[in-house]
Each structure stands twice: as C-alpha cells, then as structure tokens.
Image 1 (cartoon, one colour):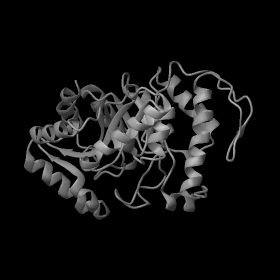
Image 2 (cartoon, rainbow, N blue to C red):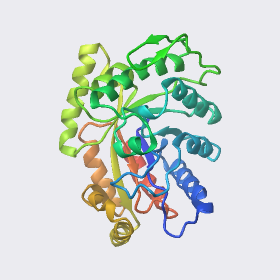
Image 3 (tube, one colour):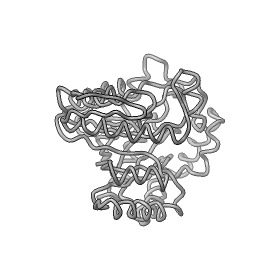
Length: 316
C-alpha cells in the first residue's frame, strides 16, 4: 500500500538533453527506493498540465515508462497517479497493469480516476463527455478491471462498455492494489469505499477531516471496514540541505516555468527540519501517508534521497 509515494510529474529538466532524460527519471526512482519511499508513480497524461508547464513539454506514456523503470528497481511498487479511465478500454488497461505486475516481479499497482484534462481529450481525439458520463464510465470500467485482475471472466452489458467472458492470462503475480484518485465526497469517495484499496486525495489541509468523514460514512453504508483503505494526500515539496538552497531552487524553477507560479503557495519548502515539521502536522489530520512530487528539484542528484530520509521516519 502507498503510505509514502514519490511521484514524477515532469520530464523537462534544465541542461538535460533527450538522451539523458530517461536516466534522469531512473535516478529519481532509484533514490526514492533507497531512501524509504514505498511506491514510485508517474502521471498518466500525454500533455503537460497547466499547473506544471505548457502542453508541448515532454511527457511519457506512463505504462511504457513504468515497465522500463521496473528493470532498474527491485522493491518499490509502480503505479500511475492516476490512470485516466477515458484513455483506454478497461480490458486493455487490465492487461496493461497485469503486464506491469509481471515484468516488475509483482510490484504493479492500479491508480485510476475518471479523467479531467479536456484539452488533452479534444486535441488527441479522446471522448470527453460530461462529468456524469466520465463517472459512469469509471464505475463500469472498475467492474470489468477488478474482475479480470481477480482471475474471473467478467461479462458486462453496460451503457459504455460491453464485454463477454473477458480473459486475463497470464494472471497477476499477486493481488494488485487499486487506488482511486480524487476527493469528490459524493461520487469518488463512494467508489473508493465500494471498489478500492487506496484513496489519494488532493485538498487543503483544513478539508482533510471532512473528506475522511465522508469516506467513513460511505464505508458504513456499504458495510466496508474503513481501516482496510489506505488514504494518502497528494503534496508537493522542495527540500534542500538548507532553507536558502530550497528557496533558491524553487525560485529558479518558477522562473523557468511561469505557468507553475500557481503552485508556490501549496509547495512545502525548506530544509529537512522544516519539511518534516510540516508533514508531521499533516499526518496529525488522520491521513495514512502521502504522495509527494518535487518538480522544482527532483532531478537534482540527492534531493529525492533527502526527501525520503526526511519523511520515511514519520511514516514508521
């Protein structure tokens, strides 16, 4: 389960040419594994997000990347944060996640959400539809995918998907954890309670308690033990050996990426003591752990290691 996950959300790094891009990604994953992170995650997007950069910045297809990273790591789980359900037929996604699990020696994980980036859909030809459409698709997809991952042969005559005795051979090496991303209190957290092992939420610290209460209420209504579900909070950090170095690295990143200025207020910045104190306060809200990205300086050798060494003792 993801209690301390390192997410790699960007692939545009200063002074890193194309032929060094993948090694820079691998270096972050290896540092994460060696410093106490339990999961390495990448976004499932084809264009960079507006809060991180511009659409023409580098973006890998996530499952190809994760399968490659699997060959350079040995213990961390590997996942998208999170798969856009609208980008793949659910039977293909079940096969893809199973392949990731097998090539990684049983470390595959499914992170999934309804999809939201309209520009990406419109530009690349994926049907976007309405909010309701996307959540109906996600629920049907989960019924198919979970059945296939469990070794069943699901059939469904749904509004959006139709499958008949869908086979998934070879089977995953072990049970693949399912994380649903998003903090919607009526739809998303109800689906977490009904289908998922993990929940990854994005919200202000003051809203965490309400999200956890909503999830608990859904669990009570569905007869699910809330303690079976791991809840992580998505965060961003910029850590360095000293406060001044961390601030300087964040400022340099924002100068290179003006579109990311909106992230300034929500990025946890500082030396190890400052960062640890901030995350300890977040843990006190009742969440089980974090997913953390470091777009400002994760590519700098040693920064991911420092982040893991700072946060892992908090998780225990």
